[in-house]
Structures are given as C-alpha cells and as structure tokens.
Length: 124
Image 1 (cartoon, helix red, strand yellow):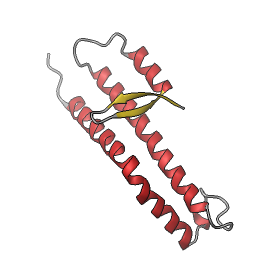
Image 2 (cartoon, one colour; image 1 turned 135 degrees about the vertical axis):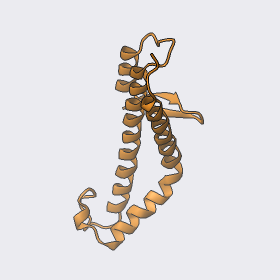
Image 3 (cartoon, rainbow, N blue to C red; image 1 turned 120 degrees about the vertical axis):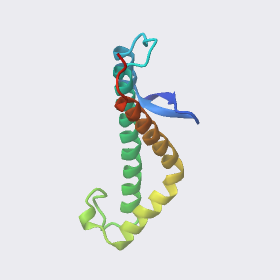
Image 4 (spheres, rainbow, N blue to C red; image 1 turned 180 degrees about the vertical axis):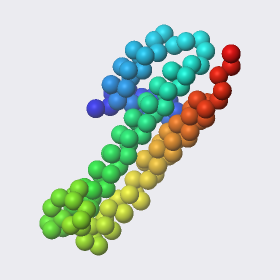
C-alpha cells in the first residue's frame, strides 16, 4: 500500500511505506556529500516505485481485457485471449498512458542519471 510521496520535479510520486522506511534507516541522517550508498539507495527506491506503477497499469489493462467477455475468464492468462481481449487491453493501455507514462518516464530518467553518477570514478 502506498502512503507517502516524493517529489520528482513535477509533482509527487507515490512511494511504498516500506521503501520510505528503508530510505530512512539506510541514510539517516543524510550525509553532507553524495555517497555511492545514497546513489544506490536512490536507484533502488525509484526502481521499486517504477515496478509498482508498471504493475498497477498492467493490472488495470488486464482487468479491461477480461471485462465484457465471459470467455476471457482469467485476465492474466493471455494465451486464452482472443483479438477482442487484446484490443481492450491495448485500448486501456492507450487511455492510461497519460496517467502512468510521464511518471514512469521521469523515474527511468532519474534512474539513468543516478546510474551515470555511480559510473563516475571516485576521487581520492
């Protein structure tokens, strides 16, 4: 369950409570400099939030695929889907892109930036 939010530049991004707890334990108080541990924690936190958003979107699309046709009894059993079920899935994905897409792209960009910082050589 999502209880908190972090700001990623253009609005809050939901963060699972467990991720907030790990963040607080691993980096409290935050160091004055940017350490590799803080960067790795930032990557892990953003990956967790991204995975949650992706799972929510897929679940909503699978639910849409299963609605309207009693033959599509198991929304997650894609092997049994007909063309109409796939159409409903893709239509839902297109509708939800405006809600999920920007947040997921922003998280992927944040992850890439943090990983580039991790790739920099350590100054002695």
